[in-house]
Length: 580
Image 1 (cartoon, rainbow, N blue to C red):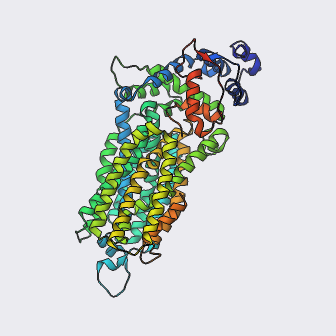
Image 2 (image 1 turned 180 degrees about the horizontal axis):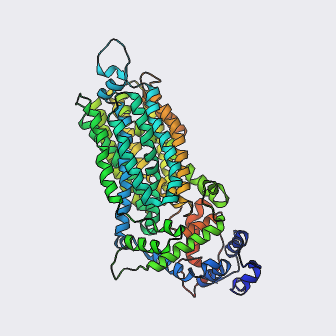
Image 3 (image 1 turned 45 degrees about the vertical axis):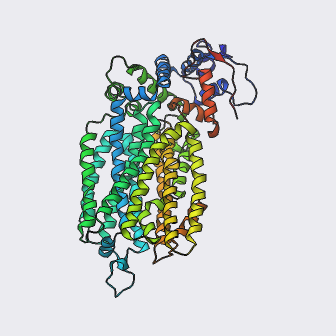
């Protein structure tokens, strides 16, 4: 069988007159080398045999195979410390682009927190009991709460879809610069809003750049970071959401006793304090080398790689080899997908499964109780706390969530992505059920503190498990050519589900509507994957239709056989089978 894949036999077997390989022929090669069976396979092959066979099958790969294999081995040798030393600039620019998520977390927290803000309710709400002048009698109606929140979500969905086209067409750098300018202009409408309708318009318009930010920073980090750092920088996006949220709640907590209109206009104005510095920094950020390779700009891709890495002479890095690995991966994906990069291609072949997994991973995030944390201050107020204590508890909740987000980096290394994600859902189910039960008890000081404590614990668990792992999964699972569009579709699915939760949650909490308070958690209680692989290896596992729970076992088998590009040397070979 090894002889079958020699450079002399392959062309006569597969190529034909035009010396081109069909996708079906390539898949035959993959299935021959790694059969899906429970029986031992009496085929032995070395790392060089595999590369020789695939390179002979796809003529465009021959020039990349040796360097691509060397670069992939170097990535697998790389430790966390090595990665930080080699990619300090990539690390810095990834963190810089993630600051847009801090800004968005700050922005989105304002509206939901303002629902518990007496001055804001007096300016934009209506009296629950007409004829009184007490501030606490003013409420933003559930319909307007849903409208303001969902207006931003609707804008985000449009922004997400635009992002799929804009990033593929213009690249990460130009798209981010244009979006930040756009965002800075639309803040004026929110800052000077004189009625709730102007706020609604501001939410829609600001939602457009927010939608772009939601995926751009994640996919940029996934493309500029090596395997050793990728999980940390993609999960860092969840941490950035938390930092933005705690900043927003802290600012409002500091202004809660201010009875003028500036108590809510100042927080809107602080959005400029984020946008302008980030915009200045982004001007110096290099384009993603993966994007440049996909567009045939090889010289620019090499220059980008050099800008993202250190210039230390002792660094274990070869830009030409890394570039060859990117070109190698890109060419294989073009053959497996037929070369398409449209939204429609996300629903074809193995990319359909990638899209389904990404969508469900993100949809589940919206259904496991995270909506309750977004209304934390309002939830605490309805649970019986005064306004000041409600915001104080919310600040403490987000501080604990940030600690959980940092600890999740250790958790992912210890337990793996999939185990941590599923375990978090199980624990969240238990906490949500307990919170719902407490919500059925008579309202006392004890039940109020119990509800508040349970929500803090729920937030900690969520941001240790589901929250950060979600971003790692949706960034790693898509193919490199369809990454932006797959992540966009997954986030759109999340936002569509969020439209529903954003309609229901205010009604469950608002005393002028359903007034469920703690019992709201019953609803979310009822509605409640790969590790350390390069993008080439993920392509192989998806092409082989490997089961998600077996990815870790497949990785061990890949390491033994040297399939495509792992660390097995020239003389190492083994017979192995694909587990089921």
